[in-house]
Structure formats: C-alpha cells, structure tokens
Amino acid sequence: MPTTAWVKSGLPSDRIRPGPSRTTPSPRPQDNSRSKSGGKAKDATPKSFEVRRLERLVAGLRNERNRGTKDPKGGCFCQARSHILSEHTPNCLSCGLVLCSINPPYHACPHCGTPLLSVVATEELLSLLDLRIAETIAKEIEAREREIEEQRKAIGAFPTLGASVSGSSTPVGMRSSSPALPPPPSAPPQTRKVLSLNPNTKKVTISSFQPAPPKPATPTMTDDEKEEAGVIRIGPPPKREPPGPAKSWREHAGGRMLYVRPPPPPKDVQNPDQKGKQKSRRKRGGEKKGQAKKNPNQPPEAGRSSVQQS
Image 1: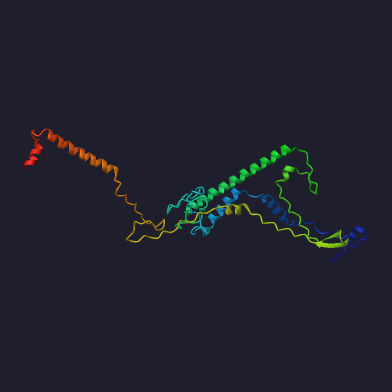
Image 2 (image 1 turned 30 degrees about the horizontal axis):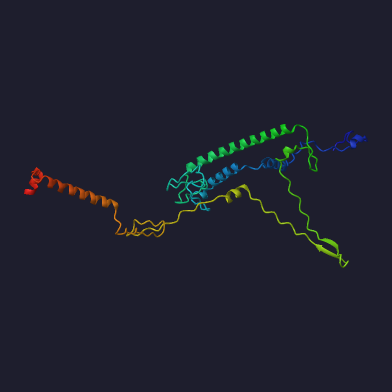
C-alpha cells in the first residue's frame, strides 16, 4: 500500500477519529396512549336518554336473530290503552293487533309471531334512525355549549376560590360538567375504650366497644334499568274454550251462566191494560144493543142483510 506524507503525521488533528456518519434520524414510534386518552376524554360525555334509546333500536334492528322471534319479555297487549301507540309499527300487518310503544319493532308480533317489518322497511328505518341520532347529538352539543357560555358570562373573568388541593381556578359553574371524584375509602373500624367511675362503689371500670361497620351502599340503577323497572306490561287475554256443536251460540268468556226466569205475577192482581180493554169491549156491545132497542122498525143495512140471508 503506497504511503503519503499526510497518512502518518504528527499533528494532533490527525489522531481524531472520524465521527459517525450523519444519517436521517429514525422516526420515533408515536405514543398512541395520549391520542387514545384524548379520544376517550372527548367521548366521556354521558349520552342522553333519547340517544341511548335510539341506539338500542338500531342495535336491535341490525341483529338478525330478533326478526323471527317474539319478545322474551312477553310484549304488551294493552293495544295502546295504557301506553302510547308505537311510532314505527302501530299494528301488525298479519293479525291486525294494535301495538304500543313497549313492543319493539325488531321483534315479531306477540300474538301471531309474524315479523313486523320487512327487509326493505328495516333498512329504511335504520337510515332514518341514524339520521335522528346525528341530529339529536348535534342539538345536545349546541345546548351544552350555550349553557357553558351563559355560565361564563354570569360568573365573569375573575377566578373563584375552590376547595380543591391543587388550587385550580376553575369557576364553580364549570366544575359541574367535570366528572366527580370517587369518595375516599372509609377507615377501618377502631376499638375504643371508655373509662368510667362508679359513684357508689368508687371503682373504676374500663369498657371497650367497637362501632358497627357502615352498611354497604346500595348499587344505583341506571336510567335504562329504572325505565324497565317502571314498565307495566299487560298480559295476553285468557284462552277461550271452543263451544260444542250443540251449543255453538253459548258464550264461555264470563264463566258458567244460568238463566233465571222472573217470578210470575199474583193471580189477584190484574194488568191495568187488560181491564181497560174489557171495559171498552163492554161499552161497544152496550151501545149496539141500545141502538137496536131504540129503532126496532129500521131496515138493516145492505151488507148486514145479505150476510143474514146467506
């Protein structure tokens, strides 16, 4: 290998090792935890009752298992007398049963078991419900932002003192929208000793007691569970036994029925209508006899004479 003057040199600059080659830095993996947490924070706003109800309808319509099956809860047979009429399926197209709002449209008819909606009607209802969900959410967001703006105007720009440890200057009205912190864990029960002096015997007694543990809090019911608990369903009507061929006219709905004849009137008491008829007949007969006695020589009429001759 040929050597040159600058390969081996005594200068200190020649002893510096070359540094690593400059390359483009590799991109760091993005931490998706922040983005996920940010997305969850945005979606942490609780949904309203109307949005949850519409989403339950959409989920039930998209589940194909519900189309040919009856409601496992039994449905309701009030025929819109106890509840409002169903908005999407007011009646069954097969048997004509009037359906109330308790009967969901994605189940079959509670009486005949026929599907309430066809495939085309189901798709149309799904598109309509998706549109209503979007409109409802947009209205709720606008109302929430309007309420926040009104609270800001009412409170003003000055911060208010809060009871939080961090010393944040969040206005009081704005704290209601933030999620509430969980309550601190309760301390374990401690045994306490009491020193008492008996005035008669002048003796000291020490008694220890332990407070009763607090009762566990009852689990709070969600809005959906409260709604379901308050629903009163009307059961189907009782089945009627078919009448026999000899008594096909008899009605068995009210149980066994017995015809009771009214008691006959007493014989001494006569009907006043019959008395009037008898008197009128007697008067007519008396008038005819009196006329005959008054005019014995008067010739009879033509019709009467012909009848007598015959």
